[in-house]
Image (cartoon, rainbow, N blue to C red; front, side, top):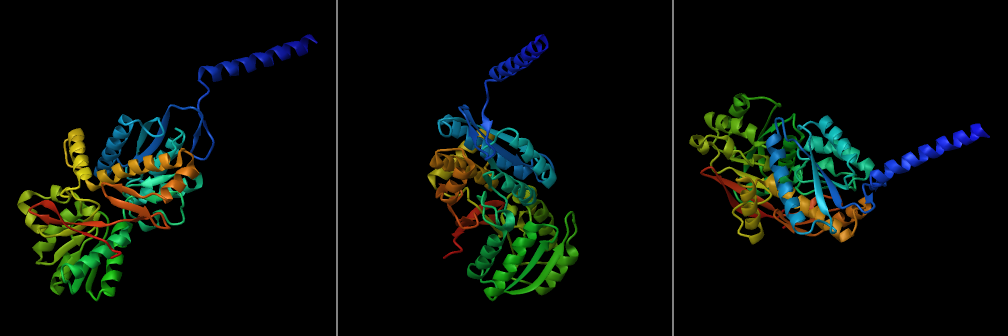
Amino acid sequence: MLRNFSKWKKTLAIMLSLMFILTACGGGDVNDGTGSVDGDGDKIIIGGLAPLTGSVAIYGVTASTGAKLAFKEINENGGILGKQVEFLLEDEKGDPTEAVNAYTKLLDQDIVALLGDITSQPTEAVAEVAKSDNMPMLTPTGTQFNITEGRDNVFRVCYTDPFQGEVLAKYATEELGAKTAAVLRNTSSDYSDGVGKAFIDKAEELDIEIVAVESYGEGDIDFRAQLTKVADLNPDVLVIPDYYETISLIAPQAREVGIEATFLGPDGWDGVAKNIDESSYDVIEGSVFTNHYSIDDEDERIQNFLANYKKEYGEEASAFAALAYDGAYMLKQSMEKAGSTDSDAIIKALKEIEYDGITGLLTFDSNNNPIKTVSMIKIVNGEYKLDQVMDLNE
């Protein structure tokens, strides 16, 4: 009996100790595995992924500032569902493996939704993992077509790579009267390859003759051999689908070898003027690229956003900042419509959303891709001017 009594006392002591620990920790909220947090927590935690260091950090930094501004405003106006929002942002360095690791880290923080990632390849890697977690995931800027494909929980604020290529072809024929075109694309990049292929397919449909398709690889800095071939064919337009750092190398070399064509490009061009010396603005003069909004737009909401962003960060807001800003408010709208932070409820609300924001009026198609208009930006004296707003559905 004494031996059993001692054993009973030891068990009771352990149980009391565990109860004390749980009480001291306040019990905590319990993650039910759906991405929803049960209990009476006083905050809603939203995760964020972005390249804050590395070669594409400029995109991650500017997107994160847009998101932070939105969540600051949201909290100042009562939060979401009466709770303050905590935005946990992780640096994934522009690397798919780092992105998945960062996402796993965020999962341990009981996030109810993910705003991110930013560039397409890390976004694609995370989307595959987030699908198995049923995590509501909204990428502001991941344009690669297959990011949302077959993933009911994954959405994007931006339009897709193929969509941009088709818009550029429509602009080339309707606004420039182009009869011939050449394409110079980075075959190491799904982004560049995707836009280029879509342009070619749509241009041929619109009776634009593709006279040259040249390519280069990641890290290349001399494009004169490819550009000389293009110059000899004298196309009306040259489509260069890549990010602005590469464009700032290609454009001067293109003019140097005698190409007189109008340059066309996708949203990755945003920032090219800042990367080219003012004395060389003539090499990109008259170039046109697709973008998600324009600072020239007189809409009061856009002008208020621009003013607030400049006050907060001391610079103009990029399209990436505007997209992430909209993404934050879209998550707010979907949670409030759902009346819950349950994953299924948020996903359902996102599918049904009609959001009118800085980057336009948006609804989602059956693949969770946005149906929205495109701002065509023309470079004039190193400044980005709104040329027109195009609707591919018209």
